[in-house]
Image 1 (cartoon, rainbow, N blue to C red):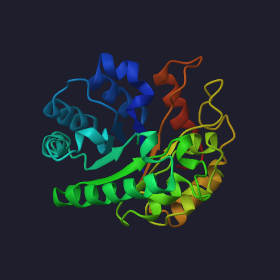
Image 2 (image 1 turned 30 degrees about the vertical axis):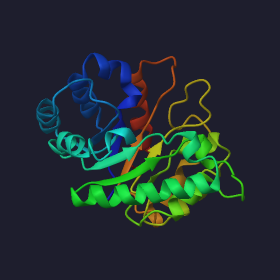
Image 3 (image 1 turned 45 degrees about the vertical axis):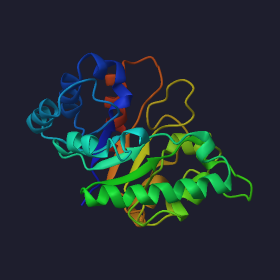
Length: 250
């Protein structure tokens, strides 16, 4: 069974901010099979649920700030996303001071492990999204990506981002292979960022990336992310990204 392709809605953030529901419908018409949220702009969960259902797509995950998953907010947050079937709470950013040393990264991994247990009790899963700084060697030569992935449970998702990883000096594929089974979803982003390249127009070795995802990473979703300003509208750009992936048989 082929891995479905979703869109991180940050890619079309200006459109989504103006008309979230209409934007979801448009990317569904392009052929995306799911959307990953990056904010919901005050739109109700029930309206999102109706739009997803009418568009024939799902939401496998959302980027949710860590401060919305604290003990006093976790139930409200998961109730909201759960109303439209979104069960993945991916932390999009970890403050630098919580991952800029070996000790800080290990302590962060322990905190995230506690969060895994709390979310799993509610029927949700969690993970974190890679940025360039997460790939850089720390005190003892290991990266925050390596340390956090090593000291969190098997169910904690390591959401690699191909463009961010290469921007941080990482091998395009090695971080995907580092934690078999933890690559529940992966962000497909072209590199370099200059010139706003569409997927397929840059340096990411896409066939190698897909081979790694499909060989043991545990990847259940490919999530396209396009965040640059370029010659096309954001909606046109993500459509071109999807067309390229389809040309590869994805």
